[in-house]
Structure formats: structure tokens, C-alpha cells
Image 1 (tube, rainbow, N blue to C red):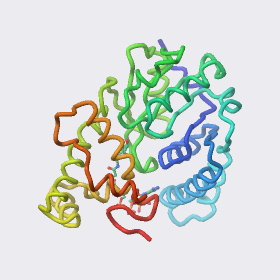
Image 2: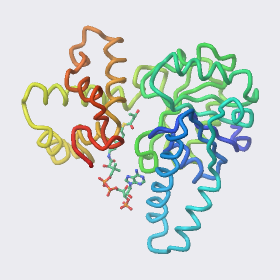
Image 3: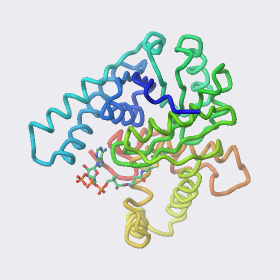
Image 4: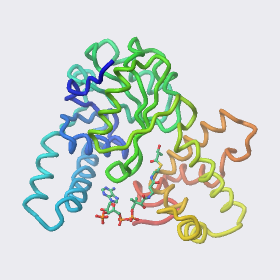
Length: 295
Ligand code: 3HC
């Protein structure tokens, strides 16, 4: 069984949030024709601005002070991206569909079901879920052999990892194709079975949850916990800085999922602090305030 990577040209990314925008931008940099889709026009506008900022940062890093090359890089990448609110139309051309919508199992199932009969038979369906089971997400699909998880990390432009998740039905050709797709996007791919949180979040979430519990107990301030983990454990960011980057709502969704999975595990008991922050819209960097204030 060989990879079909040469047939992957059109990428449709569903969901113009933080992750969808990051994935779309970097797929465009890799030379794919990308369409980013969202029902919310405002979010598409915001996403376009975010992608442009990211491309500028990536371009500056790549071409140092060479303004001509930087501009060329940005323009070439932007030319590869379009946006749409009409998923059912744009999906007809897709070779791969990457879902990055809200972390809600039913919403993801419905989205994939709606495009199942419309997409080309050869198109691959992938979910960028942080923690939901890929097999459950694929439940209503008739193309289980072309279904997988592709879990990117935030910020997508910087983080070099891609987790590739196989369900039992994922074909060898699909697996090889998405591994090549990840490599073309400049990512190092690791493979994981369809287990809760896959590799990174399975290990990261208990650490992040315990950090919040530590703060709630009053053991140390968030500033000192962050400093301690950076200087004492070599982390690039402390857990609260990282929570703000990832999004407090995303952290809550992942934690709730673990709680449902292991209701007796105190580590994942609902956090009054996190729940309050979500209620108040303090979702981290994306809203200007989370554990820290960015306004
Ligand atoms: N887009 C493009 N480039 C970016 C960027 C972005 N959003 N953020 C940072 N960069 C680039 C900068 O331009 C800079 O480039 P340079 O080396 O040429 O100067 C480089 O990355 C370093 O950035 P900064 O100097 O601004 O800041 P730091 O050195 O503190 O790095 C960081 C920022 C890369 C975000 C680093 O702190 C880090 O690696 N943090 C941990 C992130 C992490 O763990 N992510 C995974 C979260 S879990 C997840 O995503 C899973 C999901 O399911 C929830």
C-alpha cells in the first residue's frame, strides 16, 4: 500500500478558530490550496487577520531582513487560501477535510455526516479534536477507511508535532498519506491509537489540572507556579501562561471529558475557578484576558 500524497491538493479546514486558522495558514505555506470554512463571517475575517500576522512572523524568521522575500512569501501563501461559509459547496473539491470546530461530539458527528455523501469518494476526513474519540466522531461516516485524527498543537506555526490517530478501520494508504501530509507541512508525526487525549494531552492535562488545584488550594501564586515550572522544569511556558495560550474553554472541555471518563478521579473534578472564568468570557489570549491580562 502506498501513499496517495500526490493526489492531495485541495485542503478544506472546517472551523476558523485558533487551531483552524493555524492549520489553514501552515497548509497554505506548504503549497496546498486551502479553503477555510466557518458559518461565522466575523470569525473568518478575524481568522484572515490572524493568518496574515502569523505569515509575517514566519516570513521574518525565514528570510530575516529581506523585505522583498518576506512579502513574496506572504503573498504566495495568501494566494493559496480562500474562505467560505458554504461547507457543502467547497467540500466537493476537497482531497482532505480537516475538522477544527467546537469540541462537541455531536456537532462534529453532524458536520462529518453532512459532507459524507457530497465529498469525493477519495477524500480523507480528519479531526483535530484534542480529546474526543475519533471512532465516535466517525460514527455516521461511510468512509471509515479514510478517517483519522490529525492533532496539531498551538501555535501551529511553531509547534513541530503532529499526532496521527488511527482508528481500527483507517487504511494503510490513508495512514501513509496523512503521514506524508504532515511531513509536507513540516511536522514530525507520531502515531497513537484512538485513546483518550492521545499522547500529549493525556500527559499534559493531569499536570495542567493539578496546577489549577494548587492555585485553588492557595499553595502558591500563579506567577510563582509559572516561574517554578519554567526555571525548575525547563518548560517554555508555565501552566497558566499555557492555559491562556490554549484557551480556558478548551482546557475546560478537555477536563470535563476526562471527568466523564473517570468520575472518581479528583484531579478532573470540575474547577470553580475555571468554570467562573469561562462564564465571564475570560478565555485567555484570544479574548484579551485569562489568568493574565493582555489588554
Ligand atoms: N505564530 C508564528 N510564530 C510564532 C508564534 C505564532 N503564533 N508564536 C511565537 N512565534 C515565533 C516567534 O516569532 C519567535 O521566532 P524567533 O525565534 O525567530 O524570534 C519564536 O516563535 C519564539 O517566540 P517568542 O520569542 O515570542 O516567545 P517564546 O520564546 O516564549 O516562544 C512559544 C513562544 C513558541 C509559544 C513557546 O513559549 C512555547 O513553545 N510554549 C509552549 C507551547 C505549547 O506547549 N503548546 C502546546 C499546547 S497543547 C495543544 O496545543 C493541544 C491542544 O489540543 C490543546
